[in-house]
Length: 213
Image (cartoon, rainbow, N blue to C red; front, top):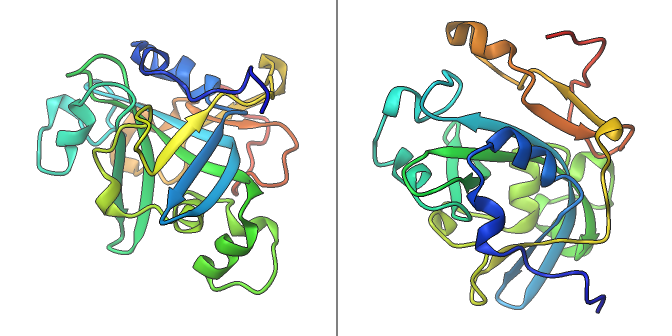
């Protein structure tokens, strides 16, 4: 194994700049090891959510509930919530304990275990919609609500993120508004905190077109 490829340490996640980290995660490799079934993919799309001033964030205004409690954990904690009662959403908590920042992993490019991913998605052959969305990639990786609160940097974790060998330069990062923001979010809905690797076929829809902030 390349010595430059390693599990990201806890310190990686401690920055208070969640927007910067959302871009830094592009090109990193997320891996799940569930009962010996290993699947992995390159992170190609992310979204940043910043508490407490971001109305698009679950922890806006310091909101503290049973669901958001995990967001206040130390950076490097896994935050999984269920969207629309059925879709698991895989988020990475960032910053010091108490900050409530998180990054939604929106799309990955499959690397290993494609046949396992297909089985989990009930698909017969691989195509880009296997993992081009947060719910799709979570199911493909076997991520469930039970993983909420796990630590990405622990050796015993069933899910972790490695550095990889891909360097994504700023010029190759597309940014735009986050997907599915409610009209009630106001100006926060237009923050360009969705990031993806330019021209990557595994990125979710819609693509950003001539966006100006």
